[in-house]
Length: 166
Image (cartoon, rainbow, N blue to C red; front, side, top):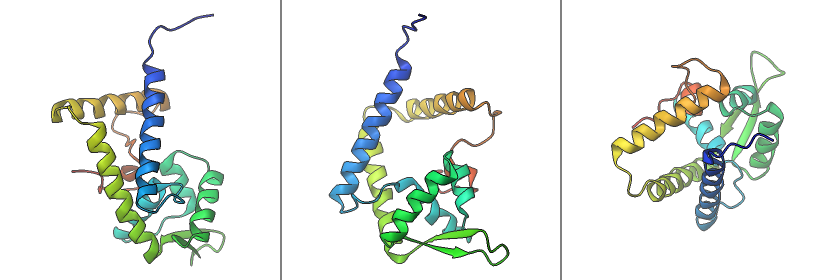
């Protein structure tokens, strides 16, 4: 068996899990423990602010998940009153997803939770180190996904939103 002594893949997985856990704990502290996908909610709100209401397929493509996974998340969010589905006027088979007023309030809490977790995670890193890390993550995504340089990996940018830019 070929064993790679480089543990960066394991460390990346551990970081992802720790970030996810911290985010869920922060959301629970704000009364949003039932919110399964904060990124999905944030993405929906960002698109709405740009005057666009996305389809389930567009969301799945932006988040790099299956349409079925997005459909399950949306069903739960709709049941909880965070989002609503509407039939597309031009194509009756397509559903457009928008954030409800309850969802808008939750999105604000999601942004605050994400900012708090990111501050904690990046403590002790200079701005230059943070920029370099972001470049490394971009390259890793490009390597794994086979996408050419310049193709956005950030789900907000893939959906044409610049809200994640400073």
